[in-house]
Amino acid sequence: MAGFLLTFFITFGFLIPYLNSQQLYSGNAAIDCNNTDETGPSPAFLYSCNSERLSCHTFLLFRSQIPYVSVAAISNLTSSDPLELASINNVSSSALFPPDKEVIVPVNCSCSGWYYQANASYVTPSIYDTYFIIANDTYQGLSTCNSLMRENVYGELDLGVRGLRLQVPLRCACPTRNQTLNGTNFLLTYLITWGDTVLDVSKRFNVSARSVAYANGFSEEDQTIYPFTTILIPLPTAPLSSQTIIHDPPAIPPPPPIIRNRKSKKGLIVGIATGLSVMVLLFFVLFVGFLQHNRNKVLVVAWKDREGKKKKEVLTKDVLVGIARVEQVLKVYKFKELEAATENFSQENRLSDSVYRGLLHGKVFAIKKMSTDVSKEVKILNKINHANLIGLYGACEHHGVFYLLYEFMENGSLKDWLHKNSSPELQSWSRRIQIALDVANGLHYLHNFTDPAYVHKDINSSNVLLSRYLKAKIANFSLARSAEQGESSNSSTMCALRTRCHMAPEYLEAGMVTPMMDVYAFGVVLLELITGREAVCEQDGEEVLLSETVVSIMDGGNSEPEFGNLIDPRLQVKHPLGYIIDQSELKLRMMQLSVACLAREPESRLSVTEVVSTLMRIQLDADKWEYVSVSGS
Image 1: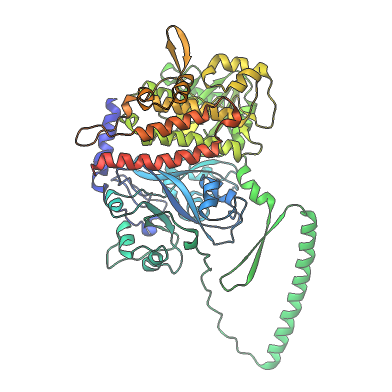
Image 2: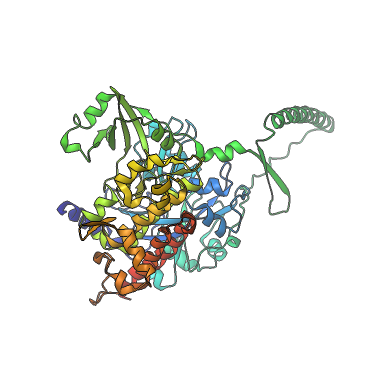
């Protein structure tokens, strides 16, 4: 505890000069991969945490580029909600964007240490990727190579392998107190391109150039901006699809005229025409052969440019779909390496019965020892790629015992954080809602954007892990199954004995496996976040499920005083004047959401898509309430 407080005050001391001040424009420093922030937050990394708000819902601007021209591809690249992305861009979920079209990307922006970031996950599709290329080409300057190198276990020279899973922090920020008081509700991260000026961008988004200048630390005299960097646009409301445009490539000056005599000019024209005819014929033959070979694999993306001219781009379905299916590289370690990493699996490095902390090549991993077949879990984790699902980085087999190397989550399980911790973060509704949203986003990806869709089957607070900055990730996929597979009722018995309180009724009674099973378990986890209690409690010597208790109370008339006694007392928010702020509406909405996930009949439960949407709306309101409590407004 003392160490945590010391770290907190040191960090807070660094950040004091930045609170309530505007962000600073990075300039070309963001493109340099050799920056440092040893003396404090640097705009060459990400935007600094300069607001009282630890998290917010905000937006990035991405320009569609092959192969990222579909809603699915862009949402996968940015780990954003594809349904929300489609909605705010006023297109269907299956829509394809023309190249260089600005696409609004909705993200959750959270303070991690010194910096705000939206967390994305990326699997390298080729052996030619570098941190510079990923930050400035793939993500178009929405990330930086400095922050990428800090976030990942791989060195710059280790990226020459296809299928590496990387964590990608995206540039975002939340409004400061002064900006909020002036009507700013969102800070849009805008990508600068050729010809952009602060004045032009301000006019397009219908905001004052002065507010844009202030948001980025520009002076009245110097508002120079550079392509491939980002600025923040303060917006009173969410951006509109009508404010986005298709960017024309920079004009290429025509070549100088060539002066020739008439005879040589005629011969040149004939030569060029003959050559072009042969090339066109050859291209046509090759193209027809290609179409015949890929008859069922071709998509033609058609659009009109600003002058009304029709343009086309031919894409294979494999390119579009394969973006989210690039299998990751799993490094195989020698047992001696793991022995050295864990100091011979010492008690000091033991995190639980079968998990050890290990230091390999300067990076910390969680090393899980397993005596059962791990092929199924490895296969699933090698396919999935999402910022809210645990990352698997290596494996080892030694005398029939398997060892899996996962990313290390400094704050352990959600269960331990809730019940064995005294962190000040426990007092924040926004923090708990963000954790719930992280879990829901992970499930949303599993249920809707993997092929085949997966059911985790064992969602509980022990299998939700928290990073150093309380980013939640779903772990333990040993029981995961394809949603398309049937499941016998016999397999439910073992699970029921272990985690009965999280098991859906249809699984306990008939072994039925559907995504609704995970929704039910999520409802129980949500109750633990709301109440601060474990899912099972003792009453008069009998085991009583917390979920049954809450459902009974809510079905009895939603009496706030009655269910209010279940709310974790650590979540009381005090006004600076000393009185407790009334949050009965927030409590009721959270309870109602959990009960909607706990309906006995699967078809009566919310889908995980509806859960994510509801939580995002609740999160916005919770941020406002906590902002009021901090500012005293």
